[in-house]
Amino acid sequence: MAATISFRPVVRRVGRITTSRLKHSPDGESMSHRERAGWWSSSETETHGTGRVGFFARFFAATLLVAAALLGGQIGALAQSGPSGSVSGPANTRAPLNSQGAPRKRVSENRYTVGFVTGVPYSTEFAMVQEIATVLARGQETGPHGEVAFRVLPMVETGGVRGISDVLTLAGADMVIAPVILVDRLRDAKTFGDIRRKLVYITLLHTEEFHFLVRPEIGSIADLAGKTVSLGEEGSATDVLGREVLDAEGVKINAVNLGLDAALDGMRRGQISAALLLSGKPVRFLLDLNARLEGIRLLPIPYSRALQRDFLPSTLRHADYPNIIADGESVDTVAIQSALFAYNWPARSRRFELLETFTQGFFSRFSEFLADAHHPKWREVNLAAQLPGWQRFRPAQRWLERNPTGEAAVRNGAGNERTPTGGSSDQEKKLFEEFLRWRELQKGK
Image 1 (spheres, rainbow, N blue to C red):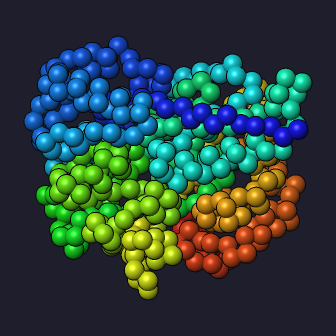
Image 2: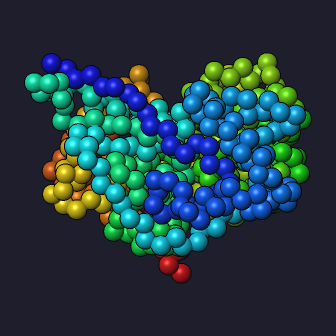
Image 3: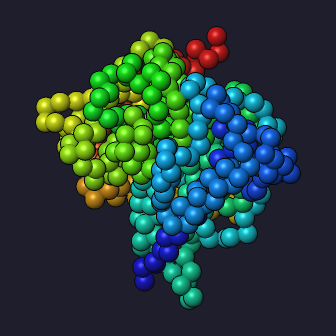
């Protein structure tokens, strides 16, 4: 009898807006005494050039965000006279990678559930985790009481460093889709101690593209100087890496942190000039946008020399967003590589065995994700591609060693395998893998 899945994504800590983007408590479960003191103190706030925020203003903003999260959206985030949310100020300040010490991982008592930390519900990464949960739930044999071998439980986060921190600390958080560049930096900066043996990767995944949505009067990225721009949720990959992109282009903005719904509403009202989103194309949320009627369009991001070390060139096309990009036109942008990381549980532990069961099911049924009903980003994935500087999860490596021809058949089943930049040749795939090796060598210099 086929198993059913109860899809109940877990939403965590949506309303925390005052902590530094990368300075999170290593306990991962709740704010520390120090953070609580900072939360309730009216004298300790983030100013970033925008003025000090008082106790009641912060309490009111936090209450709005928590209420919005409970209702499933960013409701009312711009209901005030101006753009609300976490204001980051006029500078594109890069979030610090200060060491927080080695975090302590807690062990979940749930014997049948693997926790999959994912991005916000409108992101492509969330959609792909939902597809994983649904596909792997089908076809499992059930026990006498309806129990199954395992379930995949999506855990909703803002993404970025917070998702990585969750896997390092939270009970039940086993895996995360994360930008490779962020995980590499956390490793090198030892933000959470030495994580080289605490994290492993299961497979490289797809690229995530920057989507720069702008109002009609914005003709180039230089026009955003001094303008109010939403960089997504605070501490997200969009927030952290978006600041780097803008810095590389020499553009100083007035940054605010809003969810995509609230940011688009602010653009319609003329309160916000642009909104940045980092997610794999096409983002289904954007496909429902009546962009041409509202005058919202996608802005090109030049692939400048300053971006070439850590970012990849990519292109958004009419086929990706027929409602935004005219037929025959395209928009150049930049992208980053993502990977599926997992906590490196001790061998033969229950959590290790659950991850092994997940990996075997995911790899052996990967061809199902290449069907038209699933997100096209699956067609970029090469299960055998290696990630320099990281150890692969041992059961994943053993599966690939036992199934070399099967893995190739899985990829060929997609028909036209897509490369990270949208190409289709094995040569471009090799060039991308050479880029990853070159970047690793550059870091050692």
